[in-house]
Image 1: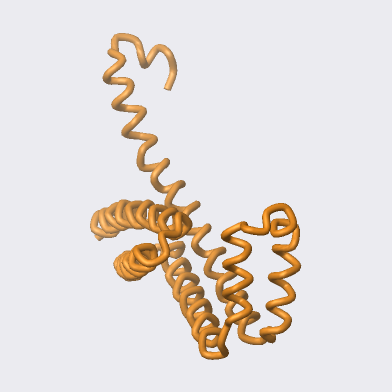
Image 2: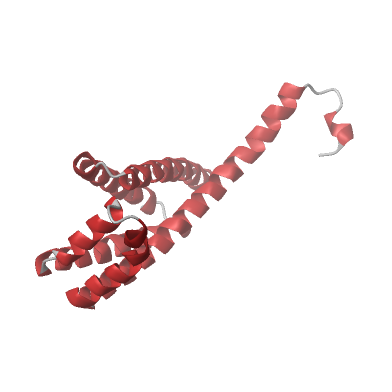
Length: 180
């Protein structure tokens, strides 16, 4: 747009035009970025779940002690470090298997859905919304027991991603309908 095209137009007209042109682009960029974050998270969860399955409880306990040693030396009553040490020390083989399977399944579902979303497959949008809804409900259920701010933050991010998926789905459906 050149300055000569803008003459005679009010600020409201210009603001509406700029917002109308940039808003879908901004939503799409936020959608793509958040979906990529979910994809990377899914890959890391899958790898982490597989590794967790094969790490011995003794090695895991040693790793957690090593990673939390500095924090515990500064604050022996640090809630997070002491809770993590206690959880790993009392980790049963059944719990370890559950965590491994959960991480692998959760990660693979994310990767599968992200691939569909990035390829603009219409089936992936409602599927992603459905799974995000289930994960959000589960996270909020866990939050009601643990009161973990991390779960609340993760749920807020997932709600944000779900709203972007919904907006992108609406846009993709309109494009598909217009192409017919």
